[in-house]
Length: 274
Image (cartoon, rainbow, N blue to C red):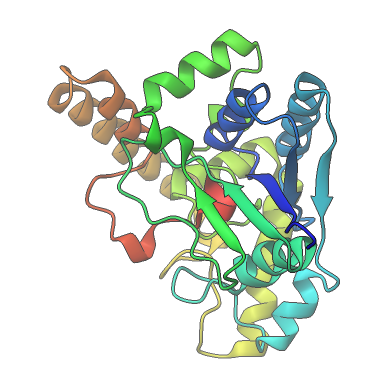
């Protein structure tokens, strides 16, 4: 009787948590596969970070690509930009290529959700995929993630200087001050994201045609609007510092934009943002 093949796969997003998980599991699971579902719309810093991690692991990170581009799927969806209510980008460009990659093999999929997070994990549509949560099993929190990244020498991806999560350069989960970070650090990508909005308005009419609810990227380019966004952000940071002065980990989570009162349906998918 042929023994069923069991594969061990760590899915990477290019973010701090999945990177720390890959580092931790490197010596625990010898036949671990490391994969990254590449939308071809990632930040340059993400690719640089993956190359750095790949060198540390001493093993190839498999880059998965959809057979169809983002622009193809945008056309299929009638020009409607993806949103938190309709995450077709994650489904078509992240999850589908991953599930095609594993086929019918039995897979233990390692996911970097921490013990201090109230977040739903990946819900596989295939019964041969079995999610594993090592951080939760070992009670590891944000402080532990910092320790793993620091001790390995990998550190954080450079985009964390202006952005709180991994994901495509036009990710709709970005806060407005992060869009300003994109404008400052990658003006050419901001321009491309703005063009997607303009094209969506033309094709989708009165439907979803902005990355932010109720405000287009062109509005964010106004200097007065930028000053207002930064003033509100700094005020919020100071308020949260005072409110969370006895809990450094929670304070950092707030400052990075991961608020306690976020609705689970609004939380970013673990495929893109862990």
